[in-house]
Image (cartoon, rainbow, N blue to C red):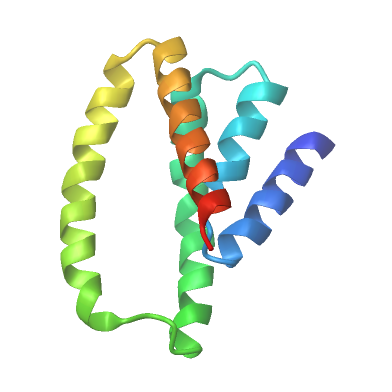
Length: 115
């Protein structure tokens, strides 16, 4: 239980920064528990809602949200999320884990290469 609290706290800090707590939450739960990849990603989606709302309120108050780009991003994001969720539940857990790991590796390399 303490381990889960630490994982939740760490990913909450990252979520509050607007980085995305799933980058911490998903790998931590996969490596430190025996929960399947699909279940971990489902937990992340449920976890994301309240943490995203809290972070969004703060960022709106600070003027960090460009409202003109929100609508198209949300609309296309919802469509892509539906497609991605159907794909995720149909994939084998090990395949999904490898896809997610590859995604994190590519994003990490891209961040390290930024000037």
